[in-house]
Length: 196
Length: 196
DNA sequence: ACCTGAACACCGTTCAAGT
DNA sequence: ACCTGAACACCGTTCAAGT
Image 1 (cartoon, rainbow over the protein chains, first blue to last red):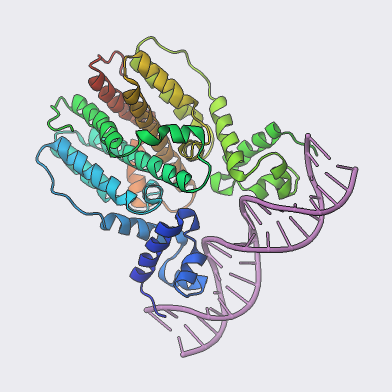
Image 2 (spheres, each protein chain N blue to C red):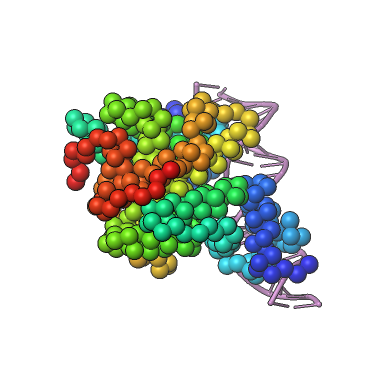
């Protein structure tokens, strides 16, 4: 059976969603494709490169929403889209965060945030700092949500994970996001238009 | 050679700092201790449990600084201590963040932050949301710093990692932290005393 | 209490060779 | 261009047995 790069990435997304990042293995992916493990090295230089391509695909598939006029609402939409994108696949947050942290891709949302913030009047250094702070929040929050899901599906749930269960979710995400947005606004001397 | 639990954790910290989290392996740690891999399962139920103990030790060893009076300065001190703690060992941020996300420990800083924020007048749900947002920032920022260090010591540095090099470090940390603290303050209707 | 020895079911990666 | 087959140097974990 002959595969193209895109076919491999497609299958990798399937394996990711069904078995999780820890079990998205070169050997497992190969066997799902009916291939020898070594065959994957025709398409990707390394497992890291494979994961970078998968992370990029996770972001590419996110449904895009219209961009509001107010800078703070734009920030909220970009961050919510990113959250939706990484939550759409099991362990998506950890995958995308790792690829991003190692500078191997997944940089589109960060670039859009910097753009939005500069148009809002942020000097470039502040725009970059604020953009990264927003990304840390989105990846961290989505990662917590997915870690909790995983702990739930595997039997034993540690105490403080269960305690946090009701805190996670879209409302808490919006609430935390508002915190960071309000901080940017205060630094900017600009008013916050939307909120929730 | 006979070892106690604490000896194993001590050695694990040494291996972590010298080889990184990916190479902190049950087999490698055992061989550094002059043991068979299976011997470690006398001290720890699993590698996860070992890592949880190591993460806890990283936090325990952090030098404590005096707590200022103003709530926002207290938040800044707690977060800076946490940053110092995880930066003190190679891949410390990733290790502690992972253990924390899976609810296996490393929860002391989060608990202190909730306490500080409640004393500042935050209702409990806001205190929890703000605390987790602060932790996401600290872990994310410190993780970026260490990822960059690692990329630097390994040969090739991708473009956007190098671009971010000058942005990371204590000043950028303080700047991002101020963003989140200002956001909490605005939500709280409270004034920000310190800043940097 | 602490450890050995052996086994089990896995990893990522390389490389010559095939079609 | 895409893949096989075989090898290399590894993983975490279990378990009976030793001291």
